[in-house]
Amino acid sequence: MLAQSSFFLSVYFGDAATATILQSLGPTIIVILLSLATRTLPSRLDIWSILIALTGVFLLITNGNINQLVVNSKALFWGILSAFGLAAYTLIPKPLLEKQSPLVVVAWGLLVGGTAENFFHPIWYIPSQVSAKDWIIMVFIIIAGTLLPYALYVMSLSQLKPTTASLLSTIEPMVATLLSVTLLHVHLRMFQVLGILFIISTIFLISLPLERIFKKRLSDPKIN
Image (cartoon, rainbow, N blue to C red; front, side):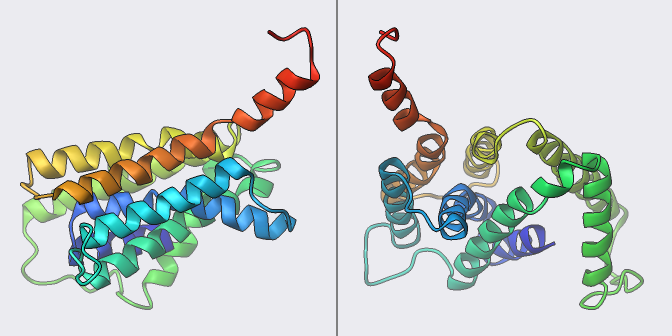
């Protein structure tokens, strides 16, 4: 609920490309939260990833000009909040997935989240200007944009590490940015594009077990 609601609000106040890129900060937040939970410092690679991610956000929202924001402040707030939502639905289900089916976890999560949303916007309140086309788009968002992606993502968590699942999710911001520029005519400036590349690159860096590979090579003489 937190991830999806804040994501849509970020799109509403900004655009789909910016909202998706900001949400892709989730893996960086996961590294920080895991470090706090285990009371251990992040690895040097993770620290560099965090610094690169912060630099990317700075370039994305300012286009390199510290005196002004290129991205709407509300879009920025909700986009970063959606990244915390991504981190939450990546880390919280792990203990449940050891005992329950991923579909059961997703079903209860969507049910509880949907029930909570009714306190803000009841399901029976339908705006009068909603057309048949709007209903088709809404159904598509519910099934293809929410139910299936979340179910498949949580199912992957039962087999993959959170960082690996996050790595695969980099397809989303890249596709969203490409479609926003080509189909929705979203204009991105040079430093914003550079910031996007920085943010996406951090997901790859976090997911690369470079230090473990190096340590294994040093400790095992059989490995060339």
